[in-house]
Image (tube, rainbow, N blue to C red):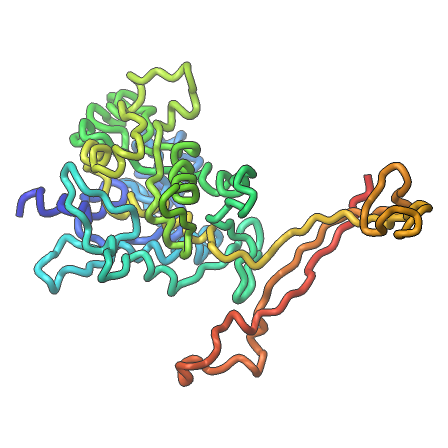
Length: 407
């Protein structure tokens, strides 16, 4: 089998750490701690932060999970469900074509790419089939940062992808979504580093732990890229404001159809002072270059799991149906002036700032939640009654927080 088969859809997995790339199933982060073993005293274990004292015996590492001279110890303090499985997007490496004579085909939980090295993925969906990413809607992950926010049947803590407010299209309300996107990172490995990115314990070729510990070809170079928010959100604006068929996001999994636009991480940190020769020599693509396969053809070393990981992280944080709202209000008690009514020549329903005045005011905000009581006996058994009314009819409203504004 030649490389064209594995690059047909790009559905191979990047191997963990120094492991080879291949047909894996997206092993999760198990929350390992890193300990080094002293060669002179094998029973003496040193923690990760003491590695500098052992530089004369062992190589130095950047990755605390997978090392040639260290052990991987599972620590309860680092092991959480959301760290191991960020969302159902982690299932994107499961094979779906092994029984169809398509061994290098997995679920598609990222944008479809057509062009360059790639053919259109069967999991992208068409008029006769649904896209693969809708499988993610069968799973739900709670929001647990910075605290356990989510409750059953609630989207509290999640950001709505449909940030445009109708009919007030001139109001931009994308601040929360920018907050979700900004910490995101993408793995971007230009093809020129094919002989380096799995060498030298992450430092690249020419690295030697004793003779040349700081001279690797990837020394101080990051293979991770930051996200360009304006270019990424331009696809949202195009969807909302399409003059022919404007539409909205109907499923949170549709985030997988949005191309995340990367830029070199060093450029994000250094700005105009960034020296491109000291980076990984990648480039910031346009949306068109992401769609037609040019960018990923130039970064063909990135596996399917690495390309889908940003979407797996984002899916747990977004929604398309908000049910928690903070309402800001301002109420006034108005005293009407004299000469009211038809006899006075003025209408009671008309406010006149010269004659009328506000005698009291109350300002504040309240969090209103649309919730579902799972113990409600009126909710039918949907497993036995196919004609039962939809679940949306059983939602109620409650005020979970009130605050008064006192300047």
